[in-house]
Length: 113
Image (cartoon, rainbow, N blue to C red; front, side, top):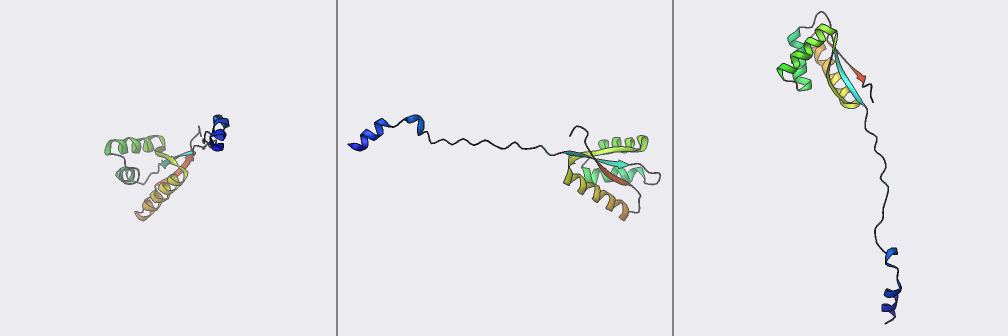
């Protein structure tokens, strides 16, 4: 019977069994633009091929970006987190050298990040 009395005198608010823990705020990673730079020697069809191969652009998207590179001196191939942007830029630069083209690819941090 003593056990029953203890149960009756317990404050149910103190024994909810729920522990709350504040979650740490997660910082959204910065984004980086992968930019192709124009030169006077790389053929336009090679730039289109690069955009399709490394950035999964369809023919229409790749052509539009290639014309932007040609006409404005640079064009954004995509926007990614730092590690992915660095990797893509490295692969494009390596592929260009292997194919004896001077096409350059750089990364630039997004302004609003």
